[in-house]
Amino acid sequence: MNKINLKRAVNSMARIIYIDKVRKMTTETASAVNVHSIAKTFLNFEPMTPKKLQKLCYYAYSWYLALNDKRLFDNNFQAWIHGPVDPDLYNTYKSYGWSNIEREQYIPSEIGSDPELLEFIEEVYESYGDLDGNQLEYLTHRESPWLNARGDLKPYEPSNNELSDYDISTFYKKELGL
Image 1: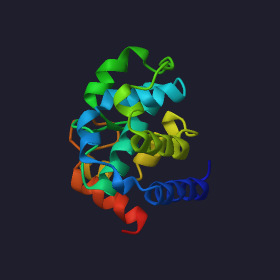
Image 2: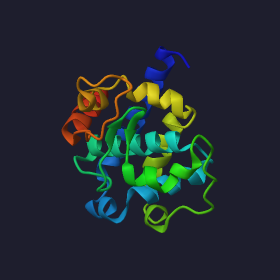
Image 3: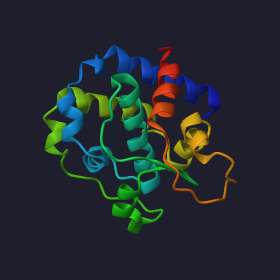
Image 4: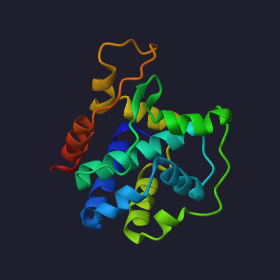
C-alpha cells in the first residue's frame, strides 16, 4: 500500500468514526473494558500476529482518547523498537512470536453489549485491518506519539518509555482537524 493510499485510508477512518457519533459513548463504557477485551474483539475478526494485535489495540486506544477525551482502558503503551506496545498484552501473547494467534470464537460481553463501542472497534478494524503488523509498525514509526516517547534513542535501542496521552490525543485530534 503506498503512502498516499494509506493516508487517505486513515483520514477516511477518522471521519467515519467522528460522523458515527463516537463522541456519544458513555463514561461507563471505558471503565468496563480492558486491553484484553479489545484484543479479543479484534481476534474475533481474524487470527493475527501479536504485532498486528498490539497496533490495532493502540489505534483503538488512540482514536478513542482523541475523540472522547478519556481513556478506553487503563493500560499504557510503551515506545518499544517495533512501535507502541502494551506490556501486559505482550506478555499474554508473546509465546506466539511471529505466528498468528488463533481466532476468538466470541466477542467479550462488555464489548458485545455496547453497540456503539463495538461499532467503533469495527471501524478501527475496517480502517487498519487490511495492513499487516509490519505495515502498522511502519505507520506508528511516522507518528509523533511514538517518536516523542523514543526521544533520541537509536532505532535498535530498547525502551519502556510510555507514550503520553497528551501527545496521542493532540496528534489524532490534529489528524481529524479538531
